[in-house]
Length: 275
Image (cartoon, rainbow, N blue to C red; front, side, top):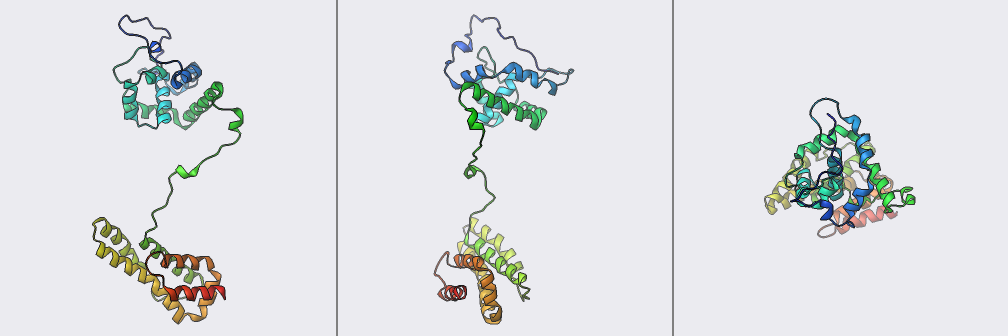
């Protein structure tokens, strides 16, 4: 059923002061609550509710809670706990007197978001922009261009450990060999697939001796590849290195990242790259 309508000016209570007498009129939430057109929000969201059944929670209460949740990045439970303690939160959500009970269950916020859907949430976002324009906090020229800082977004990357770099180097060498139609006697795929999970488990269990041994095996699996290329595939090495300059330099970086630099390896690669 459609939300209940609250009285705009309820009767005074002799034993309880009004929230407007407690809060500061210069507080950002108080100023924002006076700028937002709550009646327009109520009319626009009215079609999301049926005409029969139990009455829904007040629109201003739920939309105010949604604004506060996204404003301060709170969970549903933390939002309601803070609402119960803050008179500014309660004033922003349309309360007249200070309340000592939770306004709703945390699951009610989930149901409200599902009822509005993506379209309703986007419309509420536009209302916040209009409120910012009315307050003068946002200039119309600022809306012509949006600047997004991607440094705070989550990245699909992992920490580049030695084992991961060696494993990536081995796969790179195998892919380059397949691209040039070179028949490989062994690719070490199965061996590295067994070793890579063990390295993480050994490190978690603080079995560093076993972990270093497994890393050494992964490193040897692709380090031996260069020996095979330089000894048995000598006539293809020049073409492979010349056509994969960037890849070869990356492999040199993997090799020399930790420990002693293999001088013969880098000298040979540099000689081929500069030829």
